[in-house]
Length: 115
Image (cartoon, rainbow, N blue to C red; front, side, top):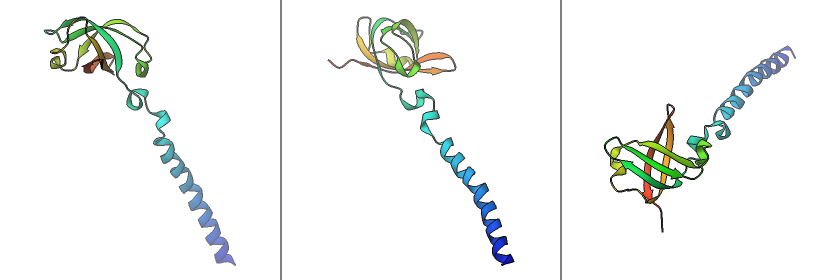
């Protein structure tokens, strides 16, 4: 009987320490705790107001940027790569992706809006 009691006591201790670790691992992978920019970043509609190819900047009047929780406005963005701006001009309707990189809003993709 003593061996059974020891076995049960050891089993309870092992289970008691193993279960919280498994729960922690699941919580660590919980996607609801991931930044929204990683989960639901999406293209935003806008109208190009100005393109400065030399500096790699574009002024866009845009709608709400939902994944950044930003209301619609007109603002200047920096392109991640100047080549993104070669095929756009003032007046173009576009869809674009913008990301916050160390506090700076960077356009990572820009395309003409589907007609």
